[in-house]
Image (cartoon, rainbow, N blue to C red; front, top):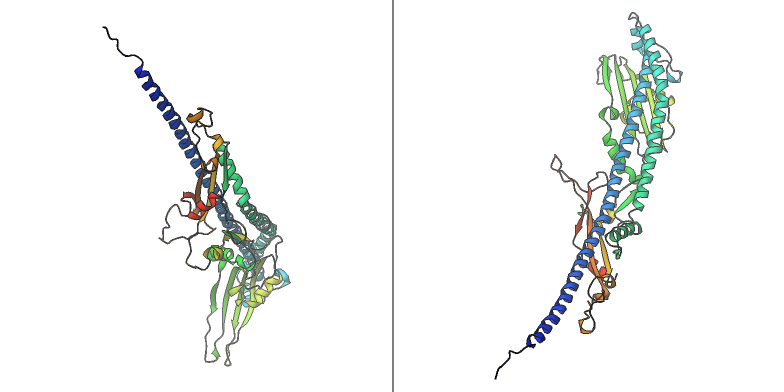
Length: 445
C-alpha cells in the first residue's frame, strides 16, 4: 500500500495568519494615521498660539517705539524753542549795547552800554550785528512755528492715535482671526479657538495714560533735555561789591539767566533768556540793588493753561517781564499726548513686588474624526474587520500656550536689571506649558 503525503493542511494556517495580518495592517495603518494627525494638530496649535503671542509682542514693541518717538519730538520742540529764545535774546542784547530800542520798544538803561560807547567803532559794529541777528530772528520764527506744528499737532497726535488703533488689534476677536488663519494654513479641516483671555480691555495688560498720568512720559522728556536747554546761566562781576552787617560797597554784576521748562500742566513750554545789570549802590542801611535789563528773549509753546514756572530764570524779574511782553507763542502745540504703558496697578494687584509680568494666551485646535485618513474613515473593512477609532467627541484636539515676555537681548552695561515697560522694544514671544486652568477650559471648547 502506497501512502501519499497530506495536502491542504497549511492552507488553514495560512488563512488564519493572513486574517491576523490584515487586522494588524488595518490597526497599524489607523494608529499611524491617528498619531500623524495628532502631531499635525499639535503643531498647528503651537503655531497658532505662538503667532498670536508674537503679534501682541509686536504691538507692545510698536508702543515702545512710538513712545520713544513722542519723547524725541518733545525734546526737539524744547530745543527749537531754546534756539529761538536765544536768538531773540542776542538780538535785544546787541540792540541794547547799540543803545537802540529792543522788542517791546524798550531801550535799556544799563550803565555798561554807555561805558562801551567810548570804544572806537563799537556802536557801528553793534548796529551791523543787530541788523544781521534781527533778520535771522525774523527768518527763524516761521521755521519754529512749522517745527512745533509738525512735531506736536501732527506727529505726536498721530502717534498717540495710532497706539489706540494698534491696541484695538490685540483684542480677542482680532487675535482669533490670526489664530484661524494660521490654523487653516496648516490644514483647511483644522479649527482653532482662543481660550478666554484678558489681555486687552479695561483692566488689561496695558492702559492709556492721560491727564495728570502723563507725568511718566513728561519726566522722561525732561530728563532727555540737554544741559544747555535746561540751564544756561552765568554771573560776571564787573565791579565787585561787598555787603556785610548792613554796610554795602558799590558794585555792578551781570547776571545771565536762561532755561527751557515744561510746566506742571504738561501742556506748556517756555524758553526764556535774560541778561541784567545789577547795580549795588554804596549803603550803610542794608544791601539795596536794582535791575537794568540788557537782553531778553522768550518763546513759548502753549497747548493749554500754564503756571509759567520758569525756575531760576525769574532771578531777573524785570528782564523776564520784558521777554514775556514780547514773547511769541507758536500755534499748533497740543501738549504731552496720551500714551500707552503697562497697566501697573492692574498687573501688580495686591502684590507690589510683581515687576516682571507676562501675558499668557491659550489655543485649542480640533480635527474632526471624519477628516482622519484611517481604515475606518476610508471605508476599509467590513464586519469584524471594521475598527472605529472611538475618539473622544469624535475629534482630535490639542491645547497650546504661548507667552509675551520682556527681556533685553544684551545685558545692560551697568549690570542693572531692566524691568518691563513700553519705553523699550524688548518684547518677545515663546511657547510655554499650558496651565491646569487652560487645559480645563480646553475640554469644554
